[in-house]
Image 1 (cartoon, one colour):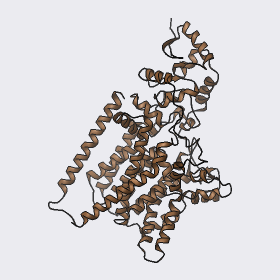
Image 2 (tube, rainbow, N blue to C red):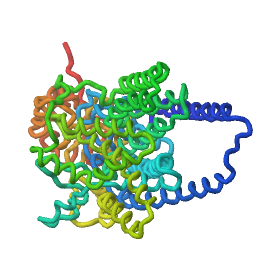
Image 3 (cartoon, rainbow, N blue to C red):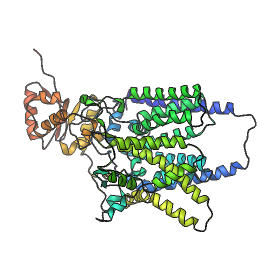
Image 4 (cartoon, helix red, strand yellow):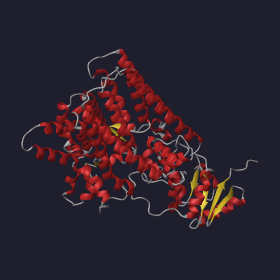
Length: 567
């Protein structure tokens, strides 16, 4: 990892450490002298902490097999998380799209930046860094939700909020009855009215921006619910959390940036100018940070526009939309609705998250992908917290059938979320490998590894390295090098048809004209067996002074395209 990212790692770490030290000093200074609190609370707090940590370890053990053995969602794609992390290791910041590197990476890349920092500190590969952050973030999120549950439901009830939020899910398995494909249904490969059901929270946690977005969202929720702490420190904390979210999880950022100002100003009907100014400043700071970081704040490529339009309903018809919601959320819908009556505070904030997210989900459509459906996961977060209040109320009742009732509620809410990691741990037959690939089984050849190592320090951020399709993915994932190939999700970034078609033609029909490659920013070619036609063209370019062989590794030769000589 080079200078820019390394400097940022040091500066960021020292800044966060300094803020934490100042916060601790401020809290100590504000604490009244001799305020030791309730002495009996010490043992209870210790027991609660022990239970929270042990349960977090148990919950992490549940997801560990699938975390360590599977590559989820977009880890293994071109311009996926693995490649972006490797690109950051090359000191290319801000990251660039790895099929069209002339453009910055229009995506929330905070998770990749954190993983790159882990690779720099621990000297591990991008894949290992992804697993480390996922497991640690899952444990941390569990603890945060436990604390949130204790705050809302009373001490000793926090486990309900943690279990229901992280393992809560819908009823997709009801669609498995006609055809028997239960495994695929439990991992949410099913649709209603032409729209895929939204996966459970545990699935989204492995869409890696959520591994940062969820704990940051819970931290912000804890701050909003704690009305005892006000003033400068409160709004600095909100500003830092929202700023981190602005390039780490754009959906969560948009939801919180809309809900926090209203909830902060009106939640206790004590409207003050100081409160308005504080929350406004926090949001403005976050927007400025997000704008500077780029990511999803970047304009769409090729002048394509936002590609967002109005469309009522998630699915094709009203009935399909209703069924979609019932199957996506299951018991979270009725139990969450009841829970709003049982919450002691935070109702306005959670209601804003729920209403706003469902509004986006049911009124807007994005032309290039279904990503706006991710607002449904923010709605699931609000419903899960409210559902835990309902289950806690049932738990507080004293009828004889209490245990049975509570057990049925928890089983119904968490069946899908608990089945999800179990099926992956068992390597169940029927898991669609196109969406959930296993870790790569065929490593790159030693010659390719040598070529990648040689190229990493020589290829600029906006240059492409050509390697044949069967071997190119290693140059992306291991080397962080842009390659010309693309996959089925590349067009979700909003590239024009002309750009995609121009690249496709060049890859399908190699051109004898070096300018065709130069115009696509292909500045390097790694040629070997199987590249006979392109090798002949390169030999001709070399004789004409348009290319030069820079290095050889076994059967591979690395060729650099040279600019046209102007007379």
